[in-house]
Image (cartoon, rainbow, N blue to C red; front, side, top):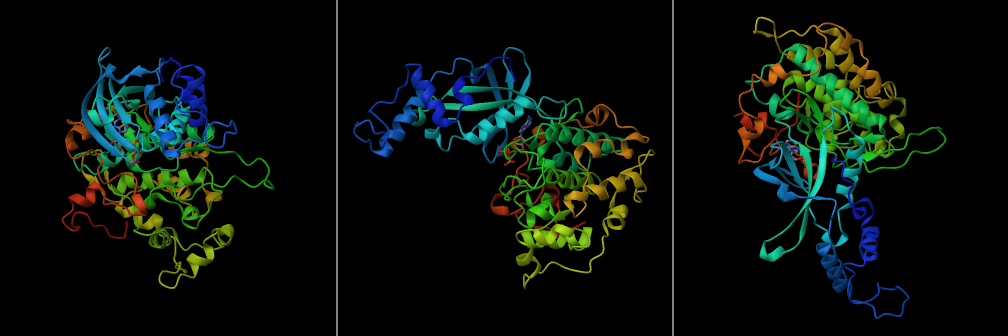
Length: 453
Ligand SMILES: Nc1ncnc2c1ncn2[C@@H]1O[C@H](COP(=O)(O)OP(=O)(O)OP(=O)(O)O)[C@@H](O)[C@H]1O
């Protein structure tokens, strides 16, 4: 974030920001009092009032926000759920940035609360393994239909690659050291997040970016939210929505309707990403919540009180365990280790593929991250200190040597098609095929199947 402060309006709720702007003596909505204000002023038609607010918002001056014209847009690199993302260059410094346009679906409400939340969290999260928010900037539209409308952009430092893209590119050959370094960065970034009392809630390979210098950055805080630590077990935790986390990376507690979840939901996601580093595609690709639970049971063993004593307390336990079509399978052994062991392929020191993966420490860490019982998963802090990271080869500060082997940016590579198309958040819980699947002749484009690896 730049040292320039944001205008006060951006630090307030939309209602507060309206008040602040009015107090400046500018942009006061015309037409009298608010509905039911009790001032005796004639009540405005609600629509008219919203239009007034819109006008006020559009006319507001944002003196501490840089104008987006400071950046030259180069290409569109992504279409996020909340708006487009462009690669751009800072005209004065030449620095490459990603401009994430804030979708103003509800412009009359002012700066969207979801974006405000993302900005506020990113302000706190200055860390080498977390995407760097440089500043927020604004632009006035010149298009006739939206003339003088204000558009806001989040300005991030630009990352050349995302992990999903790297993994789906067969030309990218990773050694154990590359993988260990990237997992270490991922867990270190997650630890910073959790120490800052923030849940990411959308851990997936597509939300993990890698800079040209080979440093991994946790990105996309669109679903992130602050959480309150439960100090005393008698005090109920706050309830959150469980409609979070892309289905393939969603842990059993969320699939079973938990609304008082904690940091362990992100730890499960880190486990899925860790396994994917070797399998090169998401390890459990269900198309419904029930199927996802079945795939988890098939790989990680049956979900029952023996492995997870509190599972029966989950809100959807009864519904899911007695579902007539797809009941939760019982009697399934945990085969994570044996299944993944021979699927994990690594480029050996001689450059040839080693099919049998023998790193028990890596397997032990993976096993713990993917524990069915969230209480048995390590915290990110514990995982960061795992013995695996203290054994040879020791993780490095970056994977610059790997980046140097990739001639073209993954973004440039996919430009025009919209980088990461199909790997974004799954709308309506419908997973889309990842790039590896789209490239496979076995699966027609636009289709997916339940898969377990
Ligand atoms: N700092 C960055 N550097 C390079 N590309 C980026 C950066 N930030 C975002 N992108 C690109 O823009 C895409 C969308 O960004 P982001 O994931 O933050 O938005 P979103 O609206 O939350 O998207 P989604 O719906 O995919 O979760 C990313 O998948 C990535 O391709």
